[in-house]
Image (cartoon, rainbow, N blue to C red; front, side):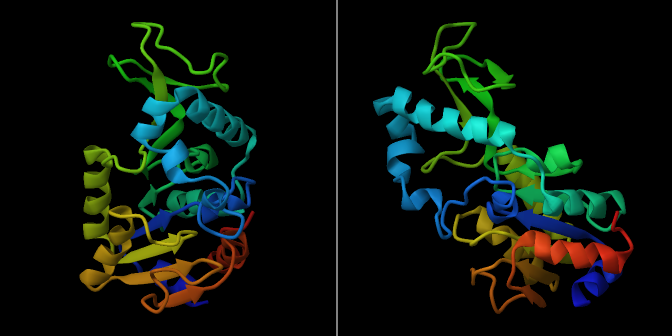
Length: 241
C-alpha cells in the first residue's frame, strides 16, 4: 500500500482535515451532497452581520449544531489519526473542523484553524468558556458583563486566529508529507496549507470521495470516505486493534 510506504519513509508527516472526516460521525458537511450550505445561506447564519442582525436566529442554529456535536462520537478515521500520532508517524493535525472530535479521539497536537463550537466568548469583554451542554438561554449572555456571547468560531468575513494560523504554516514548512482528509479545499487561507508542503518537494495523500482542489496533485489519490481508507492502512502498518 503506497500510503503506508509514504508514512513509513516520512520524516515529518502532518494531517490536514475538513468536514468529511466527521461526516461518518453524523455531522453534516458544508459543501458536499446534503451539505449544510445547500439548505442554509452562510450570510444568514455564519457572519458577523447575521449575528448583529438576529443573534437569536444564529444561536438557534448553533444550539442545534452544538447538541449534534456533543452527541457525536469520534469515528475510526479520528481514532486512526490519533493512533498514527501515538506511533510517531504523524506529528500534527491541522483541522478546519470546529467539532473537537480529533482531541476526543486522542490526538494531542491539534491546530483548530476555525475555532471550536464548544467554546463561547463575550462580544463585550474578554470572557471565554467551554460548553458542556447547549446554552439554556437563547441568546446566551456573559455572566461577567451581561454582553452577548457568541460561538468561538471563525465566521465568513473574519480572519483566522493568527496564532493558530502561524502554527499551521510552521508545521507545513517542516513537513515532507501531508495527508489531506475530507476537504474540498476551497476555503482560504486554510486550503493553501497542504500546497505549501508540495511547494518544497513534499508528498501528498489525498482522501476524499469526490474530486477536490488537490485532485491530480497528490502522490496517492484515495477516492473514498475516510474510514474506508484508514482501516486497511492501520492493518498494513500493524496498528489495527
